[in-house]
Amino acid sequence: MIKGLVITPPALGRISIGRVVEKNRKRLPEKDDQFTITSQVQTRDGWVPHPLDEQLRQEQGGKIRRIPVRLLFNDPDLNFRAEYSLFDRNTGRPLCVGNGETCKRSTNEGIQSLPCPSPDGCPLAQGGNCKPYGRLNVGLSEDDPLGSFVFRTTGYNSIRTLTARLGYLQALSGDRLACLPLELRLRGKSTRQSHGAPIFYVDLTLRSGISMEEALQQAQQLDQARRVAGFDQQGLDAAARLGLHNGAFEDSEDEARQVLEEFYPDSAPSSTSSDRPRPQQNTPTLHELILERSHHMQPHDTATNVDISAGAKQ
Image 1 (cartoon, rainbow, N blue to C red):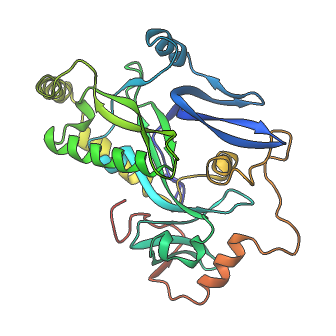
Image 2: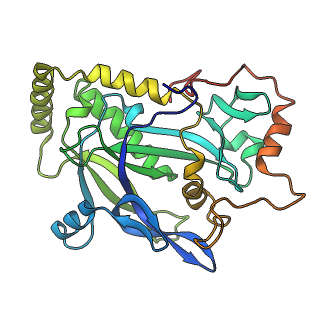
């Protein structure tokens, strides 16, 4: 295995509750009240829809509000990885990832482990540079039990809800999370900050029409059938954990544009701009500021290949 490279679950496509539109030569996120399932191919017109998108859209009367899914792993933290993440606004490169206690930060001395006071208490996070960032991998097709679709979110509501659901479902199923019949469900709420307008977030529930008792019985039966067939779920979880801990940062430079569109829409390039925007001359980049601050901080450890979960499980 190549060291320093995070090995993520194989991705077949994307799930989103919004889209990116181009306005005034900038690609800006636009909210939506439905799911969209796309392939991993992006053109000037946006992401190419996946065939499953049209299938579910027809079944649900035009708008996708529910997506039947199965999880790949029994460990909630393997299915949904959520951290405080800081990216460079100019390049989209990951610079710092933390959990509120410790963080892994890119410095001149390599990747260092430093205290993480959370965005509210970190000087580098001022101005919205650091945000909670979650990635959920789910299976949509029985044809490829190891293939997944990725839902990315920076929303507190989705992150809190998905984290709680995964922990609860793992506990009540007796660690059979990967065997439960589940679905992603779109929910809406209004807050004072939204001025009464609905905001949408993602929930993970049992599939519609299936009771808790039926779901648990199905999970037990599937778990037993897999064991008889030689399916090693613990081994699969261990392999996934090893791959995710093989490097410091999950997002690669190839995903820079996606990161900029999701995190910093005001600085994201248009489709007619260069794939990698250049910082203004004589203006220090966020990465340079981090290097300057990190030089005066005493790290816990320094390494070129580190476990991103050091100090606490992500």
